[in-house]
View (cartoon, rainbow, N blue to C red):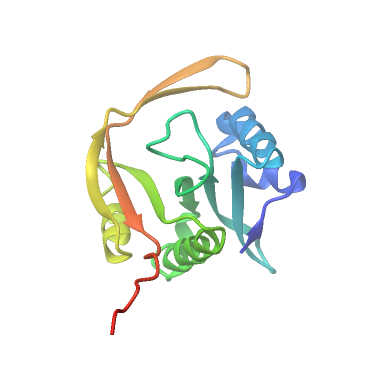
Length: 169
């Protein structure tokens, strides 16, 4: 696991499968350069990038990321050949540990309501459904054409750390 570099952006397209997100990846990378986000990649030395996970640290939607206590995970994907091998679990815990070290107490994410396997992973990792997300969003594709997406999702949340408790004796 490491922070993505500018040179990693083409690898996030996974040989063209996600080239339609090219501009979106570039925007997220610029957001990370401003300290508003983190782009993590999982890499195998013999293969290259096999997974990605983005974290929004600050957002206009404070219920997702407020820059202080709450961060938002998104764009979490692992190449299909490497799924069900513990990599997703490792990536998620790695990023949660990093966020906790940065002082964040809560992390949330949205999972497509049809993605039962991902939801189960998040539940095994301690996330709970806290609300429903309508799932309307848009992006500019690689040809600068606005694409509209509707992915109804479950909002899931996890508490990363507990404040120290005073023990009275």
